[in-house]
Each structure stands twice: as C-alpha cells, then as structure tokens.
Image 1 (tube, helix red, strand yellow):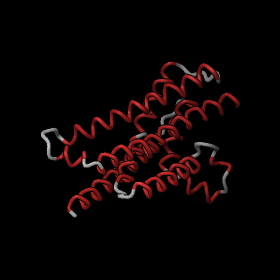
Image 2 (cartoon, rainbow, N blue to C red):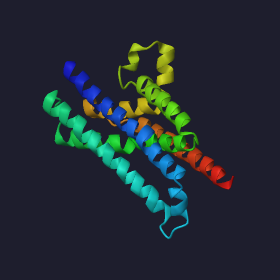
Image 3 (cartoon, one colour):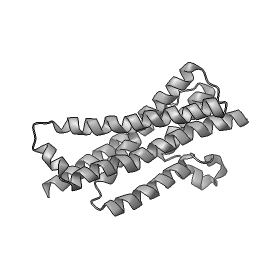
Amino acid sequence: MQKAFIQSYMLTMTGFSMSGFALFTFPMMLAEDRNNSWLTFIQHSPLPIWQYYLSKLVRVLLCFVSSIAIVFAVGGLVKGVEMTAQEWVISALLLLVTSIVFLAIGLLLVQIQSEQTMSVVANLLYFVLAIMGGSWMPVSLFPDWVQRICKLMPSYHVNQLVTTYAQEGDFLWKSLLIVLGYAIIFLGIALVMNRKTEQQ
C-alpha cells in the first residue's frame, strides 16, 4: 500500500510540476515577446510564425522531459519506486502527451493582456487543477459533490490515466479522449481570441 501511494504520488507530482511550466513559464515567454514587439517583428519577417511557436514548444517540452527525468530518478533511486522499463517509458510518454492540455490552457492565459492579471489567474488555476485533480491527495477524501466536480477537471483525467496504467496496466481511453478534447477546446478558444485581438 505504501509503495503504491509513493508511486502514485510520484506520477501526480510529475504532472503537477509540468503544469507549472505550462501555466507560468510558457505563457510568460509568449507575453514577454508580445510586449517587447518581438512577435510583431517575427510576423513581418521571412521567418514563418509556426517556427517561432515550434521553438517555444520545444523549449517547454525540454523542461517537461527534465522534470520527468528528475522526479522519476528521485522516485526510483531514493524512494524505491519499482516499475518495469516499459512502465517507466510509457508513463513518461503519457505524461508528455497529456501535457498538451496544460499548454492549451497556457495559450489561453496569454490572451490576457495584463501580465499581473495573467499571473493571478495562472496561480488560481494552478492550485485548483492540483487540488481538484488529485495531485496532492486522493479525490476520494472529498465529499461526493466535490468528487463529481473533480471528475470534470482535465488534471483529474491526466492523473487517472497515468496512475491507472502504472498500477494496474489498464489504459483509460476515456480519460485520454477527455484530456485531448479539453486541449482542442482550449486551443480553439485561444486561437479565436488571438484573431480577435489581432483585428483590433
């Protein structure tokens, strides 16, 4: 039971740390470039805009990989978490794939023009997603009505997908589809808001 808890905590905290990069580092990078008119310069240069966004995405993904490597190393070498090589690799891949929903939320945050307001909203989302997603404690400890709300959170399904695979070997396709669905919705809203801002 103790080993299962440590394993679960390791996985959920990895997702939690990755959400921090997506909600703070990623949007702040884009907001800084926007405020410095660097993004405007890119748009009027021969460099395709997709290459700019790709470079930012790669940078954040490197942060994600570093986070996974560090937390997994501590879990395996210090805390004694035991998984097969396949389970380590697939768990890491699931965390990377599902991180797209946090990046989509980060793109939404960039649409907030005030950096101070963006920071406040990011902090609120950071803690709500962690608490309601079960990153810090099992959602089963909450009252039933709170649990129902928790199960609507994308972070809940990220955690369920990864921990269920690692502990039981089962792949929760429903949770994966929900996470990807949220990502598509958030990304779509961000793109619409960005186009409206550019037209103003």
